[in-house]
Structure formats: C-alpha cells, structure tokens
Length: 225
Image (cartoon, rainbow, N blue to C red; front, side, top):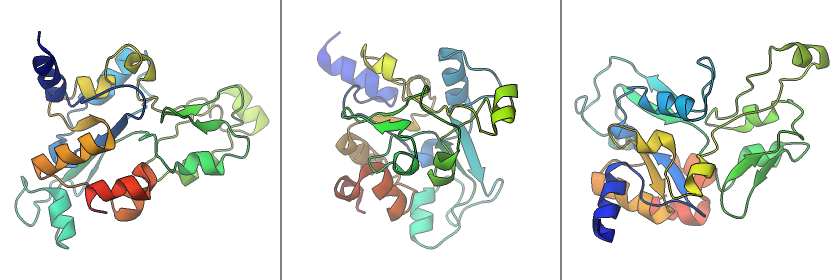
C-alpha cells in the first residue's frame, strides 16, 4: 500500500496522525449517537458495562433545527438559532490548559510534554476537584461506592479517557475514532483537525472559552477563535 493510500485509509477513520502532540476533538455535526465509540472503548480496555471513559450527550432530543435536522449545529448556534437535536461525544480532550491539572491539590494529574494528560493512580486522593473543574465531564470515579471509599470519605481513584496512548505508541489511533462509523471523532494535530472541520463546514460547536481550554489561546485561532 502506498503512503497516500495509507493516509486516505486513516482519514476515512477520522485518524490523521498519532503520537506526540496529537489532539482528539469531536465533529458534532457528524455524530449520530450510535454508541459505537462507547462500545469500542469498553471492549478495548475491558471496562465494565457501567463504566464509560467516553459518553454521548444529546441535547434538544427530537427537535428540528432552524435549517432542518441536517444543518450544522455550530452554524445554527453561531447565527443565534436553535441547532436542533445535537449529540456530542464527550471524553477527555487532553486540554492544553487542563483545568483538572490546575485544581488537583496533590498533583495526581499531569500534563505531559507529549500532550497527554495522565492520572497518577497512586497519588489521587479522590477529592473530585477535577470533576468540578472539567467542563466536559471527563473525570470518572468508578470506585466511589466501594467499601474503602466510603470508609475514608473519598471518591475513589479518578479514571478517564487516556486517548489510547498505548495504541498510539504503536501507530494505532484511539479505538473510539478508529471505529466511529461517521468519522465524528477526529485525531491529529490542531491544524489537521481545524482543516478537516473547515472542509466539512462543520464548525467547532464549543464556545471560545472552551476552545481556549482545549487548544490554548494561540492554537484556538486555527478554528477562528
């Protein structure tokens, strides 16, 4: 297979690159709430059915947007119109200005040089400050109801999307993106993601403040922020 063919195949799966400085971001206009990303994540990491590192939030269910159900939600919101039913894949976006990292009192969350936000399990005290700080609902506390958490009054150890860092280290994309039927989860550099959303005329959906959290003020400019 030629290099160009390989890149085309990766693009069809929403994965434009892997490794250091890779970002993950949703194309909300493409999400159909099929749940394939949730299944792919749970199967890949052997997660219990009641635990999810990625979820789909649907708002205005059943409502038709100002320009019809097939209109871009981002465009409708930008025009001050009703976007209609909108589904958003929600996970850890490994933010450039990660609020979870800023508020953690014990430095259990770390923004690494390669761009990934990691949780140090042996340091986390389950205070759930990160859950309050994250605007995307990424932090999960699956052990919050187990015996030790109840005895010590903590939320248990935090868990979240790792952006499949282990898979990326061997040249594979995150499972959710690889198996998304509509390429609604994009993986690549900031520029690649911005260019792809522009080609699709999808927009970013999130407001300017959220975009600066995810990408940083300078890189957010690639999205017109």
